[in-house]
Image (cartoon, rainbow, N blue to C red):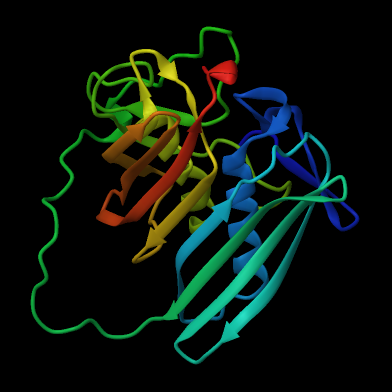
Length: 259
């Protein structure tokens, strides 16, 4: 993997230039904040035998390209259900807050339950890498679009993605961290159209029935609804074995920063 997005400095995480958001060079990428929240949950509160089934992060303030502090608080510590909150702070101000729901695993229930048809897309190795943006900046992630739908098209979008950098220096990103970081692409995939992306997401919710296997995660747009300056979008999440969960976002129009 390439250079990490963050390095440790005392009790803070210092971003590299590649941690910037596509919206602004002075702003941290929201997907990395989601990944840091997942890392904190997994490293500090997740118990063996529990599945991190939901991570919701509210991105209520633009996060500057400054050292990040992350804190966790356990809200509910039950035998089968555990809840925690994560606070993310930059320059002394909280820029995002996440909540996590963890459920203890067990045997499956009897009988069949309806689900969508298996995901039928080519393997990621057979697909070309997404082209670099028009401004020449390479997005620090391997993205393979399945089908003719690209980010700036009026079409349903499907993609395989994988990380090419460590989140924190010296740490291989875990399946949970990778899922949280990739799920933020639900916004550009579901809320972009022929005019590009004019919606910036104010939150992200990831639901996982199980953790992903392997380095590739698939995203398949399932919904987009917009009215005026508000949009809601969502994707199903996959690995090579099948569907693992969903990702949803609420977004606000921001044409001043559109890309």
